[in-house]
Image (spheres, rainbow, N blue to C red):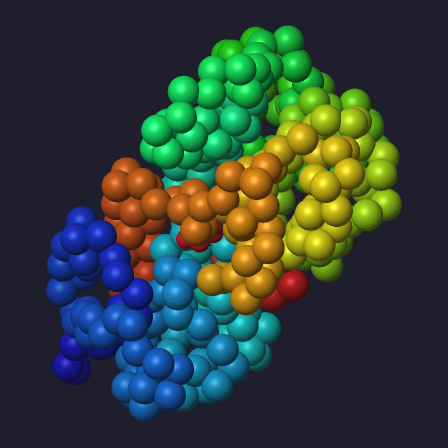
Length: 318
Ligand code: MLT
């Protein structure tokens, strides 16, 4: 029997490509940056497909891979994979939860520090040759209440850092036991308390039917005046126009936004808002995270295709 093909559709770290070499009956086809039409015509008899976030593994793409057995996402979110369509064809979808959590969590913490000191605007004044010391009286994080929406892998990193800084951390997460929360040094509570009492709120949940539009005008109306909001989780959890209104009416003092409804944004109003620090979905863009996700997905795909072992399967609707 000839070698079985694994199609790499987005750039993987070299370490991940090398990891595939430990599965000698697999052959890699590396073709990144293809248009959807090109991907459909090229997938051919590949048994595996590996994507990061750029490639959309749509129903049509999945149907074109007539020999596909597994789709691997080098990362956590599977918004770019039609998991239902894959499941209907018996194709397993694997992701790498936790492998890039440190990078994403540290970015959220960086956003909190930068917001508290208005660092992006301070830098812009310096770049413009202005010494505007009076405009930049910020606040300290120590002693402030941080409310985390979700304390999975990424939220846990943020909790660890925030506790170290001396913040009081509370969180809501329907999937976490109070014991885990206590071990992280935080108190588990409900969404209402998180939004009503926090000085900083940081989002760390996936975009699901339950979280879509969770931060909307009625939510902002309940939040503490002058709250800072960080979204390094997923676009769509925050209603962008409602956040802009909350920034304009002073409820939200500043927002750190790494993720958007559409990426790149169709409407840049939020990213360009004076009190928003924006970044182009770079939570997992660290050298360490990219090596971790690439090696992990290579191992999982290899294990599944050669030994039938399933690690980190994503369920449709999850
Ligand atoms: C993830 O889902 O793993 C992160 O958002 C980073 C990425 O999109 O690759």
